[in-house]
Length: 183
Image (cartoon, rainbow, N blue to C red):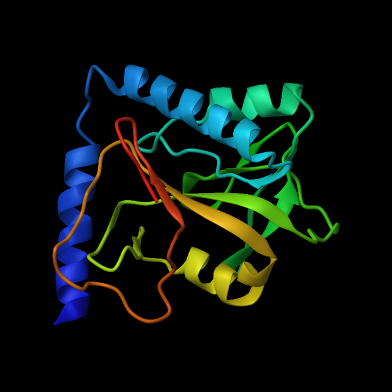
C-alpha cells in the first residue's frame, strides 16, 4: 500500500516538475545564492553535491563558484546499485540514467561537512522521496557517519501529508527551495 502511494506521489511530482516554467532560472539563481551564503556562514569546506539533471535545480553556477573559491567538492560516481564520492573535476561524461560524472578516482573521502541531496519531495516525517533507485539510501547507510550536515534541495516544496517512506529512507537537517529554508 505505502509503496503504491509513494509511486503515485513520485509520478505526480515528476509530471509537475517536467513542465517548462519560465521562472525556473530565477528560482535557481536564488537557490544558488542562498546556498553559497549558507556555506560561507557555516564555514563548510568539504562539500558533497550532485550534478543536476534537467528537471532539478541547476546548481552548476554554484559548483563553478565553489571551485573558483577553492572548496573541496565531491559528487556521486555510480557503482552497482549505489555510488561512491569522487572529487569533482572536468571533463564530465554521461553515464547511466543520463547522469554526468567525472572520471573514476580511487581516492577515498574521509569527511563531508555538507551534503546537498536532490529530492522530488518529502513525506510528513521529513524523509526523502527520490527517483526510486535507492542509491542515496544505500550510500547513507554505509557513509552517512562521515556527513556533518545534510540538505535536501528542490525548486518547489512537494510535501506529502502521509507517511510514504521507510526506516531506511534518509532524512536531512535542512530543506532548501527557492523560497524557503526549513531546519
